[in-house]
Figure 1 (spheres, rainbow, N blue to C red):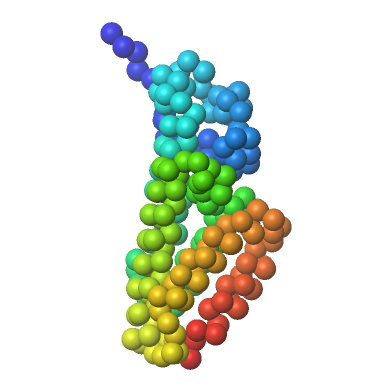
Figure 2: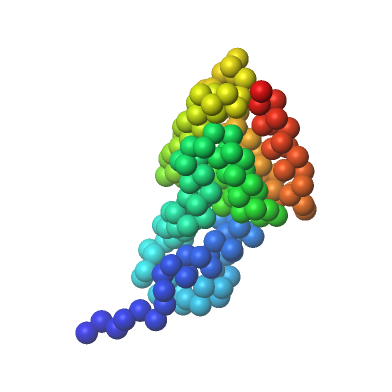
Length: 189
C-alpha cells in the first residue's frame, strides 16, 4: 500500500518561489531547492520529474496566487483607479525581487517555448485589461479623448515588464511610484 506524502506540494512550490526569485532558474542549484523545500532528491524527482517541470508548476502557482490578485484590479474595470491599484499592488509584489514570471521570461524565453507561451498569455491578458480600463476611463471622462487606447495599453504593458526588472535594482519603491504617476498623469483630463 502506498504511503501518504509527508509534504504539501503547494508549500513546496511556495518555498521554491523564494529560491527562484533569489537565484533565477539556472542559479538555483538542486541542493538548495531540496534543502529549502525540505524535500529529498528522490522524492523531488518522483513528484516533479525534472527541474524544468518543477519550474512550470512553480510559475503556474505564482501566477494563480501572486499575480492573479494583482491583475484582478484590471478585471474590476474601474477606469484609471483600477490601473492605479494594479500598479500599487504590483510594485509591492515585486519590490526588491522582481517578478518571477518576467524574470523567467528574460532568462529562459529564447529557449523555452512553454515559458514564452506563459509570458505571452500573461502580457496579452494585461494589455486587454488595460484596454478595458482605459475604455471605461474614456467613457467617464477620466482621460483625454485623443488617447489611442490600444497603443497606451501596450505602453502600460511594456512598463509592467520594465518595472519588474527595475524592481530588482531599486532599493525603494518610491521611484516606481513616481514613474507610475508620470505615466498615468498625462492621460488624465
